[in-house]
Amino acid sequence: MQILKFEDHQAPAEGDASTLVLDNTIDPRDVQLEGVQRIDLNFPKFTDGRAYSQAYLLRRRLGYQGEIRATGDVLIDQLVQMARSGFTVAVLRQGLGPEAAQRQFDRFHGFYQGDAVHAEPHFAEAEAEVERRVAA
Image (cartoon, rainbow, N blue to C red):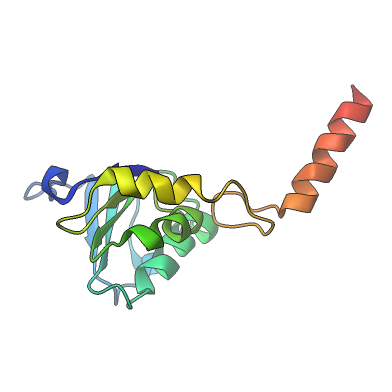
């Protein structure tokens, strides 16, 4: 996941059809994604998790492959779950630095259950790897 400082984030230009900014009340299944390269999902406050659901829907159900960017009240302790939900870029809230964000990722080396990015649970991936080795 790419981490941006608040100051480094640029809102999409007026009329830029390649970037969508989705409100938390919008169902991604109702949005036309053709030609869209970036989708900005907003966290109006850290306790509002609707953008997690939007990102997950975009990745898993709709197969969206472009950039999904977390904006708004993005805190460091949320970043790992954001990455697992399908976000590719996070814009930290003002005053937070990317160095501390990287330390958060360094704390977690893997997960047992599947997520939006790696759908297979850990045990299924491990079994598939064993089968590949045996077949080779």
